[in-house]
Length: 93
Image 1 (cartoon, rainbow, N blue to C red):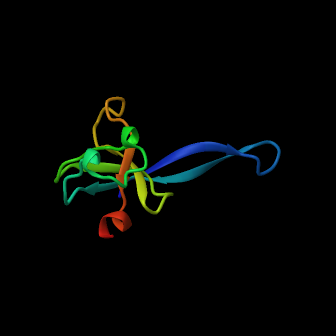
Image 2: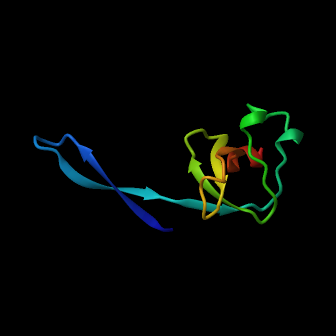
């Protein structure tokens, strides 16, 4: 996995100090196609993200155990919107 570093300010003491924060980029390749219009369990159809088998998705958040936030992996991030995809737990049910 590729590591990126973000410089941020944390109030460790006065004056503030710079620290490095690790940000992990998680990418997955879809093993199945997903069409949210065919899924009655999707929490918000407008927020869901459709994908096809073989697509590479960048996972943005795994905070919810059932629905992850992801986007299609693209060099131009402004084109790719973030949406909900079923997590591994949701798919295995």
